[in-house]
Image (cartoon, helix red, strand yellow):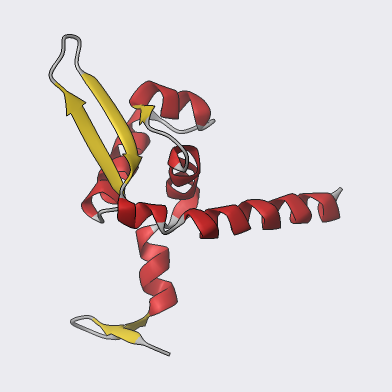
Length: 110
């Protein structure tokens, strides 16, 4: 199993991956960006319960990791769209499997 070294310890690849897409918000952002570009307001309306501050923070984190691309158009009022980068597109099969697993888990719970 491959590991990544940090200053104080070695992290396994699962831990590194989880840090990149941690929490429910990042996964949901990625899910809603999987097939098309979205404007900020579209994302916020799609993701029930996320605050504007949290959405901004998580989008910045994903952008910093090279997973999400932020496109600013020079128009008034400003237009900003978010999409998955080519690197972010590599998460699509994982997101799809999480969706199917969640569907099956939901059936088991009912």
